[in-house]
Image (cartoon, rainbow, N blue to C red; front, side, top):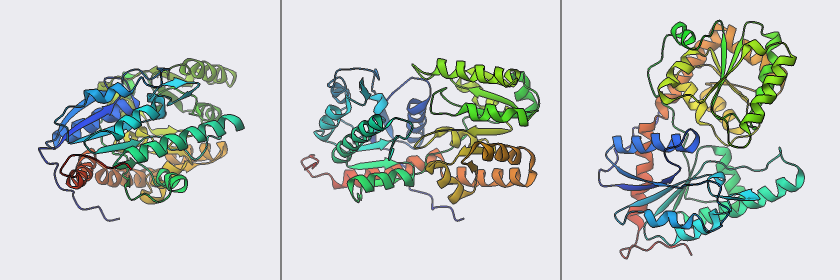
Length: 386
């Protein structure tokens, strides 16, 4: 597979106002911190504009965010997920007014849509209908307010095209991957967490959309495997998910092989991934995942549910294994743990993937979008959202 040509360096006069959750743990906040650092490492200036609370019921609560954009900013880049912009029955209720305000800004705007769902099959029929309607409205407003839109998967770009027609300003850019620290020798890493034998890891928020139970149900037939779940609780659901998993593990007689580590500090992330012989992503639904990139950056074999984002990586880079049914999961785990040829191939493909989609390359390609928008802004500084 050929590697794309190296993009041009970031101009040192680009000033990005980055609208994002900031100084929080995990998710879009961690993504944004790494993105800001990559831009700054390439000479750009970045001013974080924190989004603040995620649960405001007031539909106008998020309009004032844009008042903090510096006058010298060349571009506003919004990291968007409905769950970050209020909640009144459903999440995202503060987003419409925010996008209306964004459309009135004098400088170009870029929006990264982190979650784009064709449907919500985990919900009952009425809730699915409501959320599809919510998504359609927010996507349409975002596409109207933004001069460019970034998504991380082909599946997300296809959903936007199907709902809103062809859009030249939608850019599919693979989620960046890069290790945050040097790997630790496996034996040392396992010792730090009091682990022995083969280890499977699921990393990230403990939340309902991850099917930890499927992995736990496979443990009786994988008698040497310890399953480590590392991550803080997703607000309002994580505690119940952990309790359910612990109860299931106890019923199956594998409670001693299911470990919850809680939130992992950034300094300990290399150790956690180094302790894992395999990383499992048992998502029921997700548009894209930063964890898969973290795992690949540490060259861990990855087994993921057969969702479009993961199937794209498997088809394009052959760097992970996907499964559809619980029985397939067990077979994939055994293959990734025991088949040396598979492990060697996955590690080599992971290296190729990471070289192609590093944070440095991602920052430079983003800067190309910024430059194209700055070049297209009329002399009076107005942007056209008609």
